[in-house]
Length: 176
Image 1 (tube, one colour):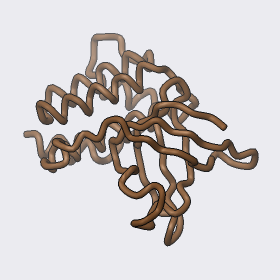
Image 2 (cartoon, one colour; image 1 turned 180 degrees about the vertical axis):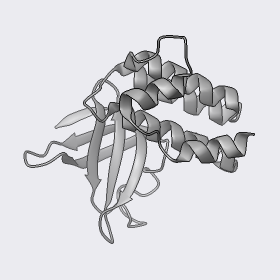
Image 3 (spheres, rainbow, N blue to C red; image 1 turned 45 degrees about the vertical axis):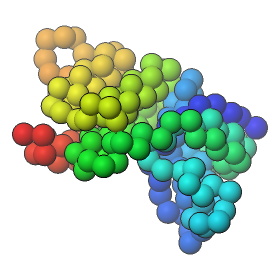
């Protein structure tokens, strides 16, 4: 068994009753788990799995694949206020997609989890704006070691990791 504190980056339907939950786990980076029965409204995961939730989790490691089995979830931060604004949810989605994109290569710096946590807290209390988007990209580029301070952080991230998530264009359009 493994355990840690993680933020939900993505939820993907696996079957009629199960989900694949992609987490950013403090100290480990990206961890993918299968939450069996998570789509059942009366199941043990009911109300505990949603985007941007931060939770104490426990999972059983798989020997065969990168999909581990989620055993326990205890949410500690919900970020409810940001869900009332489409702009904030879209920006939060971009932040999680970008972090996952950068961390896919086995990157497991604790500071990325902390950056995501601070970003969601900011969106939850202050709301999203262009400054938040640029700040997140700059901080992530610094953590990934690809920003030299001379050019825009999004270009440095794109050069190092390939095309940025498509949701960035929607964020820019909405924030202008």
